[in-house]
Amino acid sequence: MNATLQAWVDSCAAMTKPDQVVWCDGSEQENERLIAEMVGAGTLEPLNPKKYPNSFLHRSNPNDVARTEHLTFICPSKPEDAGPTNNWMAPADAKAQLSALYAGCMKGRTMYVVPYCMGPLGSPLSKIGVEITDSPYVVANMRIMTRMGQAALDQLGGSDDFCRGLHSLGDLSPDRRFICHFPDTREIWSIGSGYGGNALLGKKCFALRIASVQGRDEMWMAEHMLLLGIESPEGETSYVAAAFPSACGKTNLAMLVPPESQQKQGWKVWTIGDDIAWMRKGPDGRLWAINPEAGFFGVAPGTSMKTNPNAMLTFNRNSIFTNVAVTDDGCPWWEGMGGDPPAHATDWQGRSWTPESKDKAAHPNSRYTTPASQCPSIHPKFDDPQGVPISAILFGGRRARTAPLVYESFDWNHGVFVGSAMASETTAAQTGAVGVVRRDPMAMLPFCGYNMGDYWKHWLKMGEHVPTMPKVFHVNWFRTDENGKFIWPGYGENVRVLRWIVERCKNGKGNTQAAETPIGFVPHSADIDAEGLPIDKKTVEGLLSVDREVWKGEAEQVGTFHQEFGAKLPAELPKQLDALKKRLG
Ligand code: GTP
Ligand code: SPV
Ligand code: MN
Image (tube, rainbow, N blue to C red):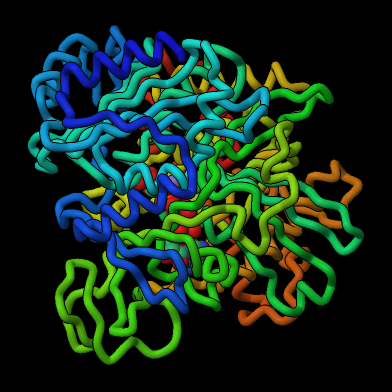
């Protein structure tokens, strides 16, 4: 028995007063028992056992369907260590306020102790966390999303090096909802929400907010990035990491299926991760990455056999669906699933729905939780303790106009500037307005556990620490025409852009050239393979164009944003901005 762990569990139980404490071993029997209990309690609804074996629907409280960034706090002792982009509370104040909410909150409930490992078991890059929760739905999700149970406990042994996460549904009132992070002590206190990123503490809370601080202290990086491998006709695989904000296409790119013309040429994409990457210097001086997760918690709407067949073939068994609609024969359904909508269904709130209904059947942020091992495109190295060497880092977001389809930064420091200047339209993944452009540096705005100025400094330092850093690119699948329609067909067609990127990573030995523009290197339209592409060459040229006047405005906005960080802003970034302004003329 691990004495530190036992003492912490005891202290949480003394505060929350559960009826019983259950240590989760991650076994099949335990999972079956929990599922049966939830089905009995109405928390889970079994889906069609023929079409979706061992799969379930969960409807969350309608006020609890997305991450709540305004209720998320970073609590180091000094406010400047949280920085201008995070909410801050003094650690003692946060603990006092939340202790009052936790007092007796598990009376009549079971407290589950969930040990889990982020990263492949036995990997030098992996880390152990323990989540205490009163939600069996959280336990069932953690079992899919992490390596959970006895194996994690065995890996921890007697060590006190584990992330402590305390979670309670509380009374699910947004007025008494807090997601607090204590980076100094590697602790998370979350209460009042049962939703994904607020409640599955291994994901955004540990693997990004706490781990980003550990990465700063231990010289590695915890990033909101997918990981994929792209295999060429010659059988050579290059690995790419890509940071896009929430609901901006990470899962879809990670599971990309090339269109037929590209497949015929021999191009294939492999999936390693769809949301989070942990990266550090390898013995060969390159940057190596693992996916700390074991499952996918993906956006359901828009997922179809046409857009993402690999996801459809992953979650057709052993999966949990949250806030989707359900057809009369017990199958999950959502907008953009393809085919005709069902004549009748039950919507995400359990109400009768027909195609004439004015509300959406599925919540726009409805999700599936599914094991990565079931993904048809999962890479053999998904479980490799060493991870994979990264050739390219991509930044991207939803930009209706400014950003071209793809551009390449001049070097690492310019790449850090490009990441720091990222912006994207908000989505349904967080509560609040949708479609508003906001700065979201490195797609980490809601996930960086310390001052973003220090985080940029860390990126610049990593550039000196790792001799062969990946090349840095920016992509944008979301330019729209005058009618607001996406111009680029996206999804599988994005492989054409990946091809240009991996060619560019061959350091001049590749087949592609680029035009130097004020913002970076942009492909000539002839260098994007257009065979079978549903748009013409002129449209591609338009997608690759850089409008100097628009970019002058963009540069002003980036400068204003950077100034928010005051003395924490690394000098390199205003230097990069000045250089950009000069190039723009
Ligand atoms: P999180 O799980 O919130 O981190 O999201 P994500 O970045 O993994 O985004 P995801 O791949 O789930 O995509 C979100 C939405 O964007 C879905 O509705 C997709 O259908 C849509 N989408 C993804 N890729 C593309 C693309 O290339 N073009 C267009 N137009 N839409 C896309
Ligand atoms: C995101 O919002 O970026 C997600 C879903 O991946 S959540 O787990 O809620 O963070
Ligand atoms: Mn995400």
